[in-house]
Image (cartoon, rainbow, N blue to C red; front, side, top):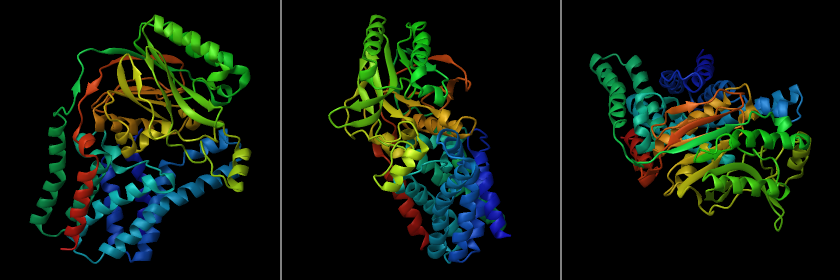
Length: 485
């Protein structure tokens, strides 16, 4: 029964995230897992943790099937097998989290374990999942709270801090249900309510300073299918789609085209780029576009973002998607790359230190697709940037919940840094996000259009930008020490 309960608890947890946003589930589901783990020996905790993880990632991240089958040249049985293996491996993180939790904490005092060990250990394993094997920083508990009062903690403690608070509340819920004494139940109830009150108050504190002048922006959503996009015969049509939407809107100060909007090297469309650059300058418009970059001297290809017109800079994507944009040099991986025939699947990562990207005299932080999901990498490369731009092509996962999940992640990055964030995609969900992490304006999916809006450059730093995650690390250490009192 406990094993079935763990599987169900994991399977319902994705409902706490976008596009469902039933955020209270994020407190209940881990509380159930905690109850199961506290009744389990180490190996049993491993198994039940794996079941929870299989339900969690099976329901929340099995969208990889779409790109593997529809765009990776894999038949249905093979695509299902790869998807199951993907979910199986991700579930191992929670399995070993359960094993270690049971080994270290199961015999400690229940109250201390629930209040301190459980939330601290949960965040430790979220962090491990973000760095091991290039990382999969998806579906962290804190993302579910982007629309709850707990979002007020975002500029202070970031995603890991909010995850810590969510898991802490889960521990309180467990104690509320299992405690027999009224005074303990009242104390648990207070500990559950208090973070929401504090978080709500924090939402009224501005940590940064928006500029006085607004900049009009336009995000072009080309809505070009993957197969058409990479077909050489449709190149002219693709370029015409983006140019025609732009030509009608040169009165915008900033125009953004999505990831690989120009699906060909600059050397092959130099005349088009020169004309586009000249026209953008004539209208005092900064235009940025996703484009693959080929370095002839090194024979390397990069996923890039180029700035034209009233601005300058070329950004090369640093963190590549494993098996989507990069393969190891092994013979097996080379065979897989040839079999799946995925466009731009043998890219090189851009250097850590790159020239600043600037539009209309405003420095901004560019990120391409998956990169926005790495909390510390975004912080490390933000520096004095005054807004954030994310270009992506979510048509790889068309018809799934993945685009909504990634947009929710982008909302958290905007909240953590209190910067406007321009989220430009090929097929949606294109959006403009405020420094409060709210979607100011968004475009419907699978439509060709230009999303317009206004943003303000933002200066100053949030506490998270100043201190990084050191306070959260300190709290985790204190929590773990308290467990052994």
